[in-house]
Image (cartoon, rainbow, N blue to C red; front, side):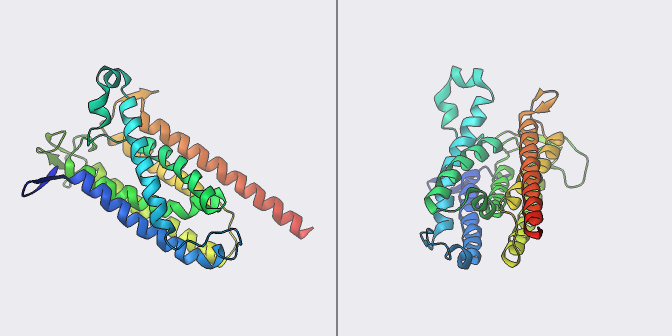
Length: 269
Protein backbone atom coordinates (compact mmCIF):
# COMPACT_ATOMS: atom_id res chain seq x y z
CA UNK A 1 0.00 0.00 0.00
CA UNK A 2 0.97 3.65 -0.29
CA UNK A 3 0.46 5.58 2.97
CA UNK A 4 2.26 8.64 1.59
CA UNK A 5 2.97 10.21 -1.77
CA UNK A 6 6.37 11.93 -2.04
CA UNK A 7 6.42 14.80 -4.53
CA UNK A 8 9.80 16.44 -4.20
CA UNK A 9 9.89 18.04 -0.74
CA UNK A 10 6.17 17.40 -0.23
CA UNK A 11 4.81 14.38 1.64
CA UNK A 12 1.08 13.89 1.07
CA UNK A 13 -0.88 11.30 3.12
CA UNK A 14 -3.00 9.25 0.75
CA UNK A 15 -5.76 9.07 3.35
CA UNK A 16 -6.03 12.86 3.43
CA UNK A 17 -5.90 13.00 -0.35
CA UNK A 18 -8.79 10.55 -0.65
CA UNK A 19 -10.82 12.39 2.01
CA UNK A 20 -10.41 15.59 -0.03
CA UNK A 21 -11.44 13.68 -3.17
CA UNK A 22 -14.45 12.25 -1.31
CA UNK A 23 -15.60 15.73 -0.28
CA UNK A 24 -15.11 17.06 -3.80
CA UNK A 25 -17.02 14.24 -5.54
CA UNK A 26 -19.82 14.13 -2.96
CA UNK A 27 -20.27 17.89 -3.40
CA UNK A 28 -20.85 17.34 -7.12
CA UNK A 29 -23.34 14.54 -6.39
CA UNK A 30 -25.18 16.69 -3.89
CA UNK A 31 -25.22 19.65 -6.26
CA UNK A 32 -26.68 17.41 -8.98
CA UNK A 33 -29.44 16.36 -6.58
CA UNK A 34 -30.21 19.97 -5.71
CA UNK A 35 -30.26 20.88 -9.41
CA UNK A 36 -32.73 18.14 -10.37
CA UNK A 37 -35.01 19.20 -7.50
CA UNK A 38 -34.63 22.93 -8.16
CA UNK A 39 -38.02 23.42 -9.91
CA UNK A 40 -39.76 22.06 -6.80
CA UNK A 41 -37.55 23.97 -4.36
CA UNK A 42 -37.98 27.31 -6.11
CA UNK A 43 -41.77 27.07 -5.95
CA UNK A 44 -41.40 27.91 -2.26
CA UNK A 45 -41.24 31.61 -1.54
CA UNK A 46 -39.03 31.07 1.52
CA UNK A 47 -36.32 29.18 -0.39
CA UNK A 48 -33.25 31.47 -0.77
CA UNK A 49 -32.60 30.24 -4.34
CA UNK A 50 -28.89 29.55 -3.97
CA UNK A 51 -27.09 27.90 -6.90
CA UNK A 52 -24.16 26.35 -5.06
CA UNK A 53 -25.94 24.61 -2.18
CA UNK A 54 -24.14 21.29 -2.61
CA UNK A 55 -20.66 22.74 -2.27
CA UNK A 56 -21.69 24.89 0.70
CA UNK A 57 -23.28 21.94 2.51
CA UNK A 58 -20.38 19.55 1.92
CA UNK A 59 -17.82 22.18 2.88
CA UNK A 60 -19.42 22.80 6.28
CA UNK A 61 -20.77 19.32 7.05
CA UNK A 62 -17.53 17.69 5.86
CA UNK A 63 -15.36 19.68 8.25
CA UNK A 64 -17.71 19.16 11.20
CA UNK A 65 -18.08 15.47 10.32
CA UNK A 66 -14.31 14.94 10.24
CA UNK A 67 -14.00 16.62 13.64
CA UNK A 68 -16.75 14.37 15.01
CA UNK A 69 -15.14 11.25 13.53
CA UNK A 70 -11.80 12.10 15.09
CA UNK A 71 -13.27 12.93 18.51
CA UNK A 72 -15.40 9.78 18.60
CA UNK A 73 -12.37 7.66 17.68
CA UNK A 74 -10.13 8.97 20.44
CA UNK A 75 -12.92 8.72 23.03
CA UNK A 76 -13.35 5.02 22.24
CA UNK A 77 -10.17 4.55 24.31
CA UNK A 78 -10.58 7.25 26.99
CA UNK A 79 -7.67 6.02 29.13
CA UNK A 80 -5.17 6.41 26.29
CA UNK A 81 -6.70 9.71 25.22
CA UNK A 82 -6.55 11.45 28.61
CA UNK A 83 -3.04 10.13 29.23
CA UNK A 84 -1.74 11.99 26.15
CA UNK A 85 -4.59 13.87 24.41
CA UNK A 86 -2.97 16.30 21.98
CA UNK A 87 -1.06 13.89 19.72
CA UNK A 88 -4.19 11.73 19.39
CA UNK A 89 -6.48 14.66 18.63
CA UNK A 90 -4.30 15.93 15.80
CA UNK A 91 -3.11 12.65 14.34
CA UNK A 92 -3.70 12.18 10.61
CA UNK A 93 -5.13 8.71 11.22
CA UNK A 94 -8.02 7.22 13.16
CA UNK A 95 -11.55 8.32 12.30
CA UNK A 96 -14.79 6.67 13.44
CA UNK A 97 -17.71 6.35 11.04
CA UNK A 98 -20.40 6.92 13.69
CA UNK A 99 -18.67 10.01 15.07
CA UNK A 100 -18.52 11.43 11.56
CA UNK A 101 -22.20 10.66 11.10
CA UNK A 102 -23.15 12.44 14.34
CA UNK A 103 -21.01 15.50 13.58
CA UNK A 104 -22.27 15.73 10.02
CA UNK A 105 -25.87 15.25 11.16
CA UNK A 106 -25.68 18.18 13.59
CA UNK A 107 -24.20 20.36 10.84
CA UNK A 108 -26.94 19.31 8.41
CA UNK A 109 -29.65 20.26 10.91
CA UNK A 110 -28.19 23.75 11.05
CA UNK A 111 -27.86 23.96 7.26
CA UNK A 112 -31.41 22.76 6.65
CA UNK A 113 -32.66 25.63 8.75
CA UNK A 114 -30.44 28.12 6.92
CA UNK A 115 -31.68 26.92 3.53
CA UNK A 116 -35.29 26.80 4.77
CA UNK A 117 -35.79 23.18 3.67
CA UNK A 118 -37.72 20.74 5.93
CA UNK A 119 -35.19 18.61 7.82
CA UNK A 120 -36.36 15.23 6.53
CA UNK A 121 -36.45 16.43 2.94
CA UNK A 122 -32.98 17.91 3.36
CA UNK A 123 -31.67 14.60 4.73
CA UNK A 124 -33.22 12.83 1.75
CA UNK A 125 -31.28 15.10 -0.61
CA UNK A 126 -27.99 14.58 1.24
CA UNK A 127 -28.16 10.79 1.66
CA UNK A 128 -26.81 9.63 -1.76
CA UNK A 129 -23.91 12.10 -1.57
CA UNK A 130 -23.09 10.91 1.96
CA UNK A 131 -22.80 7.34 0.68
CA UNK A 132 -20.53 8.36 -2.20
CA UNK A 133 -18.28 10.35 0.12
CA UNK A 134 -18.00 7.45 2.56
CA UNK A 135 -17.20 5.01 -0.24
CA UNK A 136 -14.33 7.12 -1.62
CA UNK A 137 -13.01 7.83 1.86
CA UNK A 138 -12.66 4.08 2.42
CA UNK A 139 -10.22 3.92 -0.50
CA UNK A 140 -8.06 6.23 1.60
CA UNK A 141 -8.13 3.63 4.38
CA UNK A 142 -7.11 0.95 1.87
CA UNK A 143 -4.21 2.96 0.42
CA UNK A 144 -2.83 3.95 3.82
CA UNK A 145 -3.31 0.51 5.41
CA UNK A 146 -4.49 2.18 8.60
CA UNK A 147 -5.82 -0.98 10.28
CA UNK A 148 -9.35 -0.86 8.88
CA UNK A 149 -8.76 -4.14 7.09
CA UNK A 150 -10.32 -7.42 8.19
CA UNK A 151 -9.30 -10.79 9.55
CA UNK A 152 -6.84 -13.17 7.86
CA UNK A 153 -8.28 -14.94 4.84
CA UNK A 154 -7.23 -17.49 2.23
CA UNK A 155 -9.56 -16.02 -0.40
CA UNK A 156 -7.81 -15.10 -3.67
CA UNK A 157 -8.53 -11.37 -3.26
CA UNK A 158 -6.99 -11.23 0.21
CA UNK A 159 -4.41 -8.44 0.61
CA UNK A 160 -1.44 -7.76 2.86
CA UNK A 161 -0.32 -4.34 4.08
CA UNK A 162 3.41 -4.67 4.89
CA UNK A 163 3.99 -0.94 4.39
CA UNK A 164 0.75 0.25 5.92
CA UNK A 165 0.40 2.65 8.82
CA UNK A 166 -0.74 -0.44 10.76
CA UNK A 167 1.31 -3.08 8.92
CA UNK A 168 0.48 -6.74 8.47
CA UNK A 169 2.16 -9.36 6.29
CA UNK A 170 -0.84 -11.70 6.52
CA UNK A 171 -3.37 -11.79 3.71
CA UNK A 172 -6.51 -10.23 5.15
CA UNK A 173 -9.99 -9.23 4.01
CA UNK A 174 -9.73 -5.84 2.21
CA UNK A 175 -12.82 -4.59 4.03
CA UNK A 176 -12.40 -0.96 2.84
CA UNK A 177 -12.76 -2.27 -0.70
CA UNK A 178 -15.90 -4.20 0.25
CA UNK A 179 -17.35 -1.05 1.78
CA UNK A 180 -16.46 0.99 -1.30
CA UNK A 181 -18.60 -1.19 -3.56
CA UNK A 182 -21.42 -1.67 -1.04
CA UNK A 183 -21.78 2.04 -0.31
CA UNK A 184 -21.75 2.92 -3.99
CA UNK A 185 -24.56 0.38 -4.51
CA UNK A 186 -26.53 1.98 -1.65
CA UNK A 187 -25.92 5.42 -3.19
CA UNK A 188 -27.36 4.17 -6.51
CA UNK A 189 -30.46 2.80 -4.73
CA UNK A 190 -31.04 6.09 -2.90
CA UNK A 191 -30.47 8.11 -6.07
CA UNK A 192 -33.16 6.09 -7.86
CA UNK A 193 -35.50 6.69 -4.93
CA UNK A 194 -34.86 10.41 -5.40
CA UNK A 195 -35.80 10.12 -9.07
CA UNK A 196 -39.07 8.46 -8.03
CA UNK A 197 -39.70 11.37 -5.67
CA UNK A 198 -39.58 13.74 -8.64
CA UNK A 199 -42.20 11.73 -10.57
CA UNK A 200 -44.71 11.06 -7.82
CA UNK A 201 -45.38 12.13 -4.22
CA UNK A 202 -43.20 10.31 -1.69
CA UNK A 203 -43.17 10.94 2.05
CA UNK A 204 -40.28 13.19 3.05
CA UNK A 205 -37.76 11.15 5.03
CA UNK A 206 -38.14 7.80 3.22
CA UNK A 207 -34.78 8.10 1.48
CA UNK A 208 -33.06 9.10 4.71
CA UNK A 209 -34.69 6.25 6.63
CA UNK A 210 -33.47 3.78 3.98
CA UNK A 211 -30.00 5.33 4.27
CA UNK A 212 -30.02 4.63 8.01
CA UNK A 213 -31.23 1.06 7.54
CA UNK A 214 -29.05 0.03 4.58
CA UNK A 215 -25.79 1.57 5.80
CA UNK A 216 -26.47 0.24 9.30
CA UNK A 217 -26.97 -3.31 8.02
CA UNK A 218 -23.89 -3.08 5.80
CA UNK A 219 -21.62 -1.84 8.58
CA UNK A 220 -23.03 -4.34 11.09
CA UNK A 221 -22.23 -7.26 8.77
CA UNK A 222 -18.80 -5.95 7.74
CA UNK A 223 -17.78 -5.78 11.40
CA UNK A 224 -17.93 -9.57 11.69
CA UNK A 225 -14.75 -9.80 9.62
CA UNK A 226 -13.09 -6.65 10.97
CA UNK A 227 -10.44 -6.70 13.70
CA UNK A 228 -12.08 -4.11 15.94
CA UNK A 229 -12.25 -4.95 19.69
CA UNK A 230 -15.56 -6.23 21.07
CA UNK A 231 -17.37 -4.41 23.88
CA UNK A 232 -21.19 -4.61 24.13
CA UNK A 233 -22.49 -8.20 24.20
CA UNK A 234 -19.59 -9.35 22.07
CA UNK A 235 -20.19 -6.61 19.49
CA UNK A 236 -17.84 -3.84 18.41
CA UNK A 237 -18.72 -0.21 19.06
CA UNK A 238 -19.47 0.17 15.34
CA UNK A 239 -21.93 -2.73 15.46
CA UNK A 240 -23.73 -1.18 18.41
CA UNK A 241 -23.93 2.14 16.57
CA UNK A 242 -25.16 0.30 13.47
CA UNK A 243 -28.01 -1.30 15.42
CA UNK A 244 -29.01 2.16 16.66
CA UNK A 245 -28.94 3.40 13.05
CA UNK A 246 -31.10 0.48 11.86
CA UNK A 247 -33.61 0.92 14.70
CA UNK A 248 -33.95 4.65 14.05
CA UNK A 249 -34.35 4.06 10.32
CA UNK A 250 -37.04 1.39 10.78
CA UNK A 251 -38.89 3.51 13.35
CA UNK A 252 -38.85 6.52 11.03
CA UNK A 253 -39.98 4.45 8.05
CA UNK A 254 -42.87 2.91 10.01
CA UNK A 255 -43.94 6.35 11.22
CA UNK A 256 -43.89 7.72 7.66
CA UNK A 257 -45.87 4.74 6.36
CA UNK A 258 -48.39 5.18 9.17
CA UNK A 259 -48.81 8.89 8.43
CA UNK A 260 -49.13 8.14 4.71
CA UNK A 261 -51.88 5.58 5.40
CA UNK A 262 -53.73 7.99 7.65
CA UNK A 263 -53.60 10.74 4.99
CA UNK A 264 -54.85 8.32 2.33
CA UNK A 265 -57.84 7.32 4.47
CA UNK A 266 -58.63 10.95 5.20
CA UNK A 267 -58.52 11.84 1.50
CA UNK A 268 -60.75 8.88 0.61
CA UNK A 269 -63.30 9.89 3.24
